[in-house]
Image 1 (tube, rainbow, N blue to C red):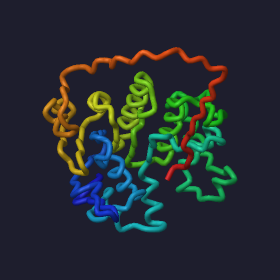
Image 2: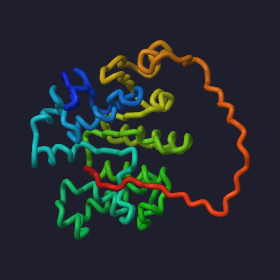
Image 3: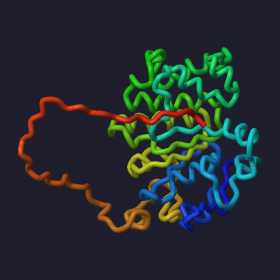
Amino acid sequence: MLTLSGVTKRYPTGDRALTDIELTLPKGQVMALIGPSGAGKSTLIRCVNRLVEPTSGSIRLDDTELTRLSGSGLRKARRSMGMIFQEYALVDRLTVMENVLSGRLGYVGFWRSFLRRYPEDAVAEAFRLLERVGLPHAIDKRADALSGGQRQRVGIARALLQSPKLLLVDEPTASLDPKTSRQIMRLIRELCAERELATIINIHDVALAQQFADRIVGLRAGQIVFDGRPDELTSDILTTIYGEEDWDTSPEPADEPEREPVSYERRDIAGAMATGVAP
């Protein structure tokens, strides 16, 4: 279904983010990309949907050569590739329903979306998806009123409203607590099985990758150093991917230095949330 042949990404500085990537992803398979920061995981995903331009190589989705597309052809191809972002990419001032319906932007055009004139079948499907991801009660809430897990569920529903053939997921659990991370990964896994979606998930959490993926691909310095089943991911292979470490022991909590108590009359906590729309 998805085939990458000789995909390389070289920056103007000469640095290579990816080198001769060869991958084939069949329909219905959930593949996890693991590797250290800077290994090229996010770059690989973004080369597939052309948010990053590969320097060379071929990327085919079914019979379509994605690297040769531009303009309307590329926009049409992106309809079949749903994207779930690490920072959710929701528009905070819009409601949950409006954010989900933005997944149809590639179909309805700017003015219909601006005027919020979506087809009835798209609205009905958005209701069904919000029910499926567990947010039927939050339809009219603004996105900035949601928790991190809820925001990610909105992002999942938005991506699926595109009716994609391929799902690209970039660090879906990076900002979530362990329990919510498992729930989100389980939800993605179930939805992919229900819809027979080919899926690439860029993820740092190796344990989650082993639990929820059919296949694991390890990247190091922009090259594939492992491609196999989760149960084949041994300590030696983890060392190849990440470097030397005792992978058979659980990390012990670090001792924290003693601190003198500090009193505050007031503490202001400011957070920044990424906003945006689906590609």
